[in-house]
Length: 247
Length: 247
Image (tube, rainbow over all chains, first blue to last red; front, side, top):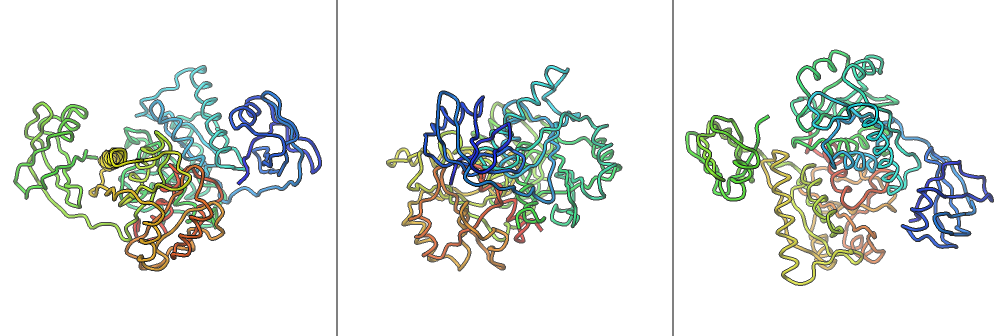
């Protein structure tokens, strides 16, 4: 299977020459040791994938001729993961695993029991930048034509608002105390689902009540208790077969 | 939710006094700082779970009175994960994630393209011991009444043999080139499934042909390419809803 790299300036038409440089060029040329003559896929990270042949590799820069170009339709329904900030290195793991499993977008949730705090603009910006980088790298590794968006940081008030304006049943909160299994809770025909994952210490009763009042559905993911960094990825596996995503 | 710890000598009847010592006692008493009067669950790791109240905590040793005792039925079908040896720290991650997601047993597969090698009896024994410890710790974290068994190491010949003697369709090989989605490949009424996960470099054509010849089913897990350390956990999410496991 061909490697995939992202081009930020769009994928040229068939016959055109694509340039991969910057961090992505460094990765392709130096880390992956791509050579002239190799076949690879280039993607704009927004659905366009092109089969290319490498023409030239210089230090941290690669040019490749487009042989073939197609547009991959986005999955339906899309799944946005609202991820409570996990502790230290589990934070990156959560984004990596969920990206591999097909998450379409992330929202960072500063929930009541999060040990990690993104306090202040600088810390928040740094955290979001790191999540974006991890999502991009995991998407490349998984050869995804879409790089998941990292849509900012939310507090409970933001989640309540977005839940209120979402279609009925489309916001699913994973919770170990829920009695309804995920399998029974996915509305058919939904275009966009939101999956809310709590922190290590769990979602508080107040948070759960507020989200439920706003229209969210509390569901259980199997009989085991999953870590905050694992839950979204395993739930995406379940959603893959419960929806049209993996058909 | 109550913490769960394992007792190696079996769970006493209601009214009896259970003792947690050794590594598990150290974990319960020192790492988790359990105190007298606390409520917790003790399990034998083989289906018995007891609600207990802690009577005494000494250094690395804890005694607790059994209040209530129940037997949890094992999941049906069981899922054995045949995991090709991942590289370095991804090895433990694979076992951890799949245990959280509900794997019932593991077999370590020394496949052709594994970068990691468990060469010789000492290295193999050390590897299996480490996998067992990780499975136990992840099962505790997930409050599972069953600790997944680590069933030794296999080479291709072993897998061919076990596939031949398994019920038709019950051995599923995850492969990115497969055209059949996992959703369509799970036989109904099976008591035991086996999930085969290849290494970073992939399963070779020869390995795939040999396993298919022996009766294994090659299936695809969604449109993305998953790391060897992530694949089993995400597949277990899908199997949770495709079988009776998570109903």
